[in-house]
Image (cartoon, rainbow, N blue to C red; front, side, top):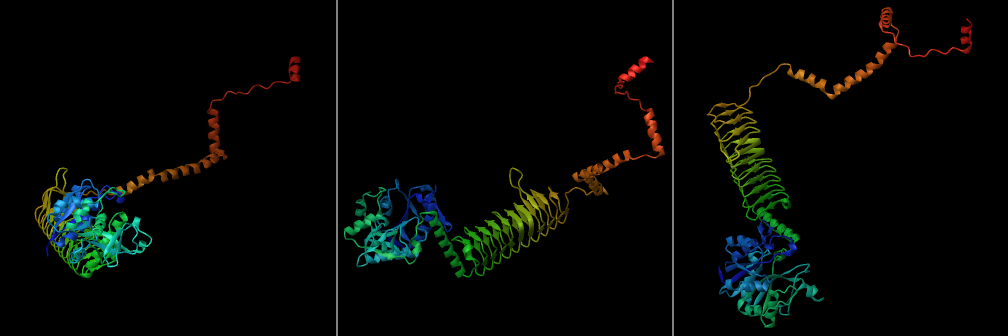
Length: 528
């Protein structure tokens, strides 16, 4: 049922300084979507007169997220608080009688909760209705103080809470419904008397109370819904809640998820019954999985489509790919955009394919790259095969016919066609088309050189450092024996030979000085 008398205003102009980020706060993602996208999607089922998003920091980026959903945007420049944001959106509200104000950083809000708030507001006839929550630790939040009749007497900020009020656990969620007729005069009277010199909606609620208007509060059924995201820890907590919600919904629909806390699933993912999701899997984007499928540990599927009874073995990655019934991939397969495995086609470990279609029954099981290719039905692609599809300028196609056999370690240089039933010899580099039922061989002729290996081993042994070290050791060991042989007495023939050598050798001139004679000898020679 459409609600033409109400407009929803989403406050998304703030920067979010506590996140310490260059990105506007509402653009940060949890649960696979930007914060502000979650909020707008929660508002749309109410079918209001309009959803108006007040933008400020990084306005163009925020518009790019919300406008495709059907929301209108209003620029708040400068940003002077929540009350000022509502004044900036006044023209966009038109003739609506009521407005719901929702913070753009509260992604956990559900449409059911917002609808209940609108109904309570309309039924009570109050000037303002607050969405509140009971939390065990209200520190940091404004307290909702009620009077004896149960109406809201005041909203007291945490810094101004008295000792008596510290026992109050009901907090303000910053989500409100207002009747616009009494609200506009109060907004006009707002004064920037706070430390930030801004205009706050909570001050407008105080003015409504001063004028005798009724202010009510509705408790949220799930306290998690009112959580804002002001820090990185808040983002992580909100993301964990979203992921748990999605996993619970899938398990309730008949999907087995092993170790659910380790599995990451985006909100738009669908999985058929009796499928098994193993630990550490990520299902992202708009991935669709049929019935009876198995997704192996550590696999990542992004915007891909799997029909029934598909097996994705562990640690496979795919993006924008399609796997038809009974096909399989992995482990450690990589399917890039445009990959398509038709019925009962298979790729195995360390196989990468891109813009490639494997027809029914075709398979490439080991260490292969297929790019810009079409592989015919029941064709076998051997280990180590690659399609050389890039020539430095553009990508070229490879077409392999039906029931062909591609030998291991083959390079198919595109553009090239392999005919039906053809064989390609292992180790070939194919640069020309191969006719149907032909054998393509493109490799050097084998030559066997007898004895070459033994000769080579001897040369290597002689040239090795170890061989040199052994020869040196032998020489050192032989040197003492040679010296000993030189000193040992020789035989008769040897003695004659050495005597002859001594006689034939030139005599050396003696360098010794003649001995001096004694005095007696000299005298004796004179007498003679």
